[in-house]
Length: 473
Image (cartoon, rainbow, N blue to C red; front, side):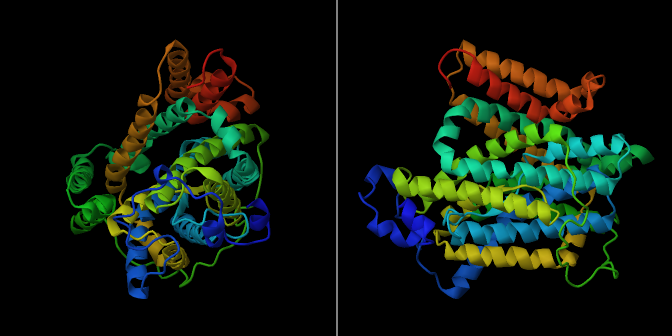
């Protein structure tokens, strides 16, 4: 199997020759699967299903660059460019992930998108650069440089994925995922109240802002509670669209197409330069490790839904290729001025909804995302989303991230050892987030390493889980 993969033979073409056949327990039920992994649906159906995948992941892809650009107070032009590049890179990564290029890619219908995991650390790193006298462009250059350097982690651990999963156990993953959600709540609630600009002009928390956010929240909650799968899948998109329209009617959106924008947004490698901060490499490398473990769960779910093995050699070949694709996509993303990429879980709901698990649909998804990324008007519309509308959606999204972490922890045996690890990790992670001044007198190297609550709590959990005696949970 390994020799075949190294010679460039697609894993999807050799599954039928793989010895021995997977046991029935390792395969997902196929009764609801209309088109399997290697079957080609009709063209119209492929495009329709691909469009549903794009709608399901669109908000997740554009939200991180949108939040980062506003947190760093970048110009509208820079914000539009970052959104465009996020879509473009996600499209490229999706094609690599689904088509499998050499050993890179899972060969599954898996969609690549911008990772939320790095949001807090990226904002913290960029803020530390500007606080020390750097410009906004320099801060972005350092962020992209650190992301590029650390992206080798998933590429290197892909072949060692079984070993990595023994160290980064569900206890560590659950703590990190919960911290991601909890530390991002401040970002979401700030947007909900009107954003940083509203804090400066005295309108933060105004009734109009809270009202807009409430409409978005009600729409998302109502649609997410629907018995219809398609309504749940599109709940966030519908909430944002409804809030956007209401804000426009209320005169809070100056909707106009910037005539200075080019028709096509061509990628400009290293537009903001490239830099590095050695101290930031450690926490970013750790977060890449965490996202790799998360991708294993997403890829396993996709394998199951597509009636593919979730044990044995073929399965681990898919995991190896999928995790390596995360790293390659993130490396390309940094070069093209975008943020780390990871395997999304949202598309699994679309597979269940449509019954189409064909990897060939992934090519159409990638093409659609790339086309959207090449059109600056798309980034301009996204950049125009009012802060309260964005906050109404992100406060739910970030809360759901925290709940996902709690679910992971609920499956862990919380004995005295696990409880101690979780308590100290949450205490330090949230403490650094709420009181960042605690590191004010530390050397810059230490501040950069522990400025993010996610990185601080996560590295604490990993170290304690590796060093404390007892059974790893």
